Length: 118
Image (cartoon, rainbow, N blue to C red; front, side, top):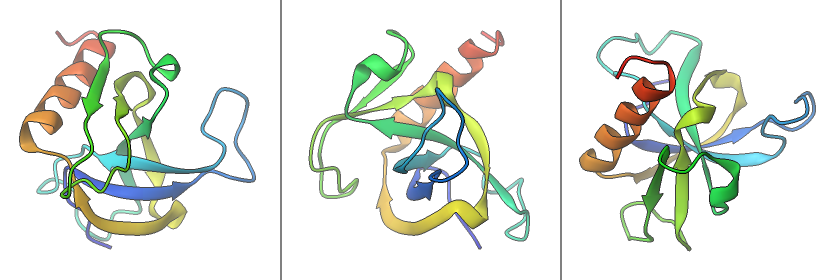
């Protein structure tokens, strides 16, 4: 399965999640470099989205306003501190929706900050 950086996916974490991990069908944004990972690679690097900014750390959230291109019905946030690699088997839907290049750059920068690279 080919996924693209900035694309919004619906990921299913139901069933075997642990406390403080996502535990439902949740939208996520692909942040991996699409040119590095072969489509056959079984995992994808994502950042979850939430309408509740309290799930993240202030300063490490990327705000996403509703738009036609992202398909978000309400304001939501990308949670950089929750970056994860997830099995492509958990993808319930690969949408045609996406965030902007500027939002992708910002969330990637926030992930680098989370792991001490900035």
